[in-house]
Figure 1: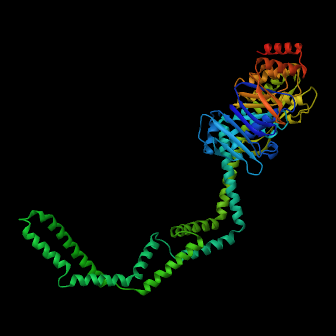
Figure 2: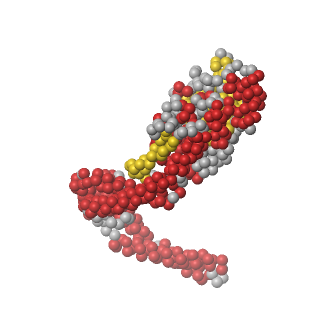
Figure 3: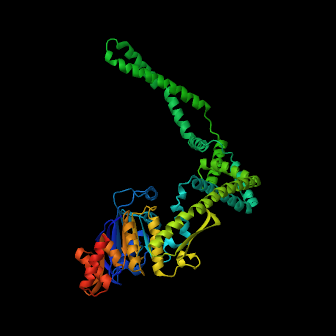
Length: 554
């Protein structure tokens, strides 16, 4: 639900700070006071595209902020997780619309896109108007509403169809990719073969080869330094008083005294180890001096190979290991192109099989919709009769159409509002009062199946009065039993049933007109309903009628 709404410099709404409550809140006020802008601001929190025309005159920006208690639903939690927004006790949604800068959208102080905001808030609240373009009246949404009512998504066949449809699409995509490749297949085949020939010529097999070559190159480049250093060490070993001889003599001397001076024992042991280490070093140096040779041909060979490797690394923007992997990928791609016909035919067979499976499930779904639509037709007619549309008839047309993620059913809600009149789409109903009643009837039915914690009704009761107005007020009240409901209403019956009554009016402050929103106390509530009953002129009769209406609505 929406806990708090803050609006700053939004059209005539200069500074609105409202705490909001559960159940039914009716928003009333004379025409032009800014009631619709209040709902418009809520629409911005739902993801309405920003317009700088809504920024208050002579100000640089508008700020709309809502504090929400989000419903704890699996779908909403998945959406929040997708956008990396942590679950919290409250969520602060903020829109800032600026004259010369990009608008800012935040959820709990985290920047989000308009698309993300729409996806999140679609699970939190919905706004319904009398407009024939309201989502529930549009044909493209009516399949979803039918499926919602008959709980089709709970059926195993629905889940089976989803998998079959995705499989069919996946195979179809792969076929299109093959067909696209086949247009230039021979040209591409020649190009890939040329690349493979160039890389294969290097015979790249050992992933450590480059590192080993660089080490060998470094050695050959420093051969003289290594050889001269080893000769120096050799001469030191071969001198008359070499370090090896001296170490041996010291150790022998210590050996004679350790029995009398035990504190030298540890030194003697370490010197003995050092002596053996020096002998090993002497042998290694002698062996290397004898075997080491400078091979200029090998040096040139390594330099040429590393140069060829580095050329291909730059050309293909790959590492040495990447070149080896690229060679394998090229071999597989060439094989796939050579075997194109076999792969294409195999995929075509798979596609045909996948289509039959998908079609079978789609037919089952289609038949379930036909078999169960009567229940929804009857429910809508009952709600409409309760709203004094006694002769209305509803027909849900379910015909075969194009395959999509929900099957191939083409669903449209049709209505005849009077006896003898032909069926026509809901959004073609001309009477505003009838549209209001149809909209509210549908909303009452589908509210049981929807998870939004907030429903906003924007003047959907326009054009009705008397008995119908009373019934519409009852429907709104019923709707508010399970969720928070805000409604802009001109009906005194709706105001009388409200749990909270918010009045919007205009004031002139410092020479500027501003809209003010105020919760009415019991006396103000009665007077506002009296105004709604009689017009701007208040009298005792209107006030008494208002009190009676309030008492009868309890």
